[in-house]
Each structure stands twice: as C-alpha cells, then as structure tokens.
Amino acid sequence: MPHFIDQSIVIDDATECCELSLVSLKDQLRHDIWLDLQGSKGKPVPGKIHLMVQWIHSRTTFYMDLLSKLQESINKEQQEKQEIEEHLEQIKGMCNVIKNRAIWIAEKIEFRRTVCDYERK
Image (cartoon, rainbow, N blue to C red):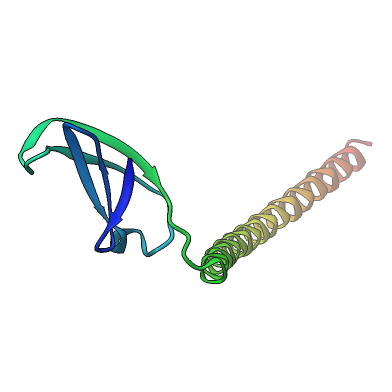
C-alpha cells in the first residue's frame, strides 16, 4: 500500500519495498523509472519495480511550463520554415538565371538558323 514518509513515497508489502523522493518529481514531468526493491530490513532483494509517475503539484505552473515549451517549439519550427523559404528563393533565383540563359541561347540559335537560311537563298 503506498504511503508518504518525509516527502517520499514508500510502496511496501510484507516482503519488499522501494522509495522515491518527491523532490525528483518536482519538475512536474512524467518520469519513467526503475527502482530497486529492498527487503523489510532495508537489504537489497532481487527485483525492480517499473514506475511511470507524474506529480502535478501546481496546475498553473504545469500549464505555464507546457505553454513555454510549446512556444519554443513553434519558434524553432518557424525559424526552420523561414530558412527553408530563403533557400527555396535562392534556388528559384538560380533557376531563373538558367532559364534566362537557356532562352538567350535558344534565341541565338534561332538567329543563326535564320541567317543561315537567308544565306542559302
């Protein structure tokens, strides 16, 4: 049966127990931890317990931290989007240069054909 002792959670039955400090949960994040089991006299026993635990002691702080992390993520995504858009603009610029050069070459070839056709007549 879980119970609190000196800001720790103690889970025990007749043979094994483990302790988890609440200070380690103060960040209000979800924790996925493995704890070693101890015998009734505090001696280690074979086995571990797997806990997934989250202690939300202040909803306001929890949601403010969550909003802050989401805003950081949004800002990072927007920065990456801006960098990609700038890169695409550079590529478009290079494509326009190539396109203009290809048009110029095609016009020059067409002009030469016209001159050659004129000279043959």
